[in-house]
Image (cartoon, rainbow, N blue to C red; front, side, top):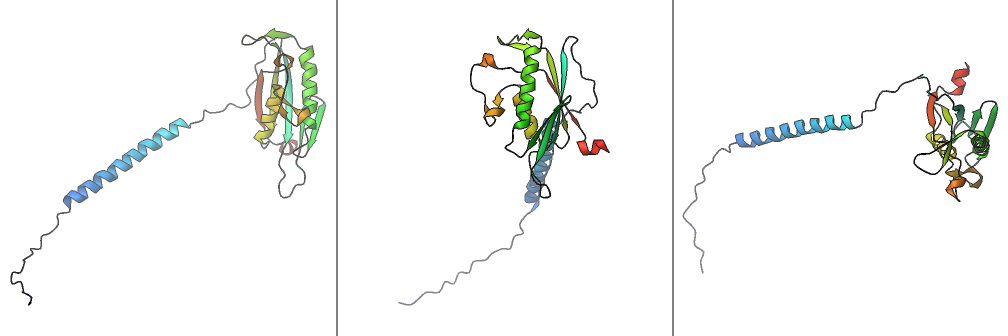
Length: 197
């Protein structure tokens, strides 16, 4: 069988492709993402705006209440040029030092002092629980470079929710036996070394 040759040639016209609708769509998409991205950015910055801080404000303590200032110094982590991390807690003339991450001796000293203050302080009835709370305001002053972990642990000790005598584990037992301090203020200052110059 022989092959037949098609004698009909198809004529193709070369039409120019109209790019105007494509350009219009691209411009609209770009405008959508530019405006949408700007709105999203504006909303995000509003959500994380931090209010301005007040420094050197006078602490307001009620008339018949006692004020105790807890000074916190040092770090819990060693740097490359330091050996064991050291820290200290000072209340008045009492100073408790910590040497190393697992040394809780400063926390134990602070808790013993707070227990004595709690026992001797005048109490008032907590409106939200059956507990008696001391008429004491604690001001915790920390160096600006003190790690937040230390402040967090001191908060837990002050609230009597962890036991420094038991490796900083949550306190067990009857909640009525707890001796919490709930009126707490925090301030930060320049690191101790910079202050002494």
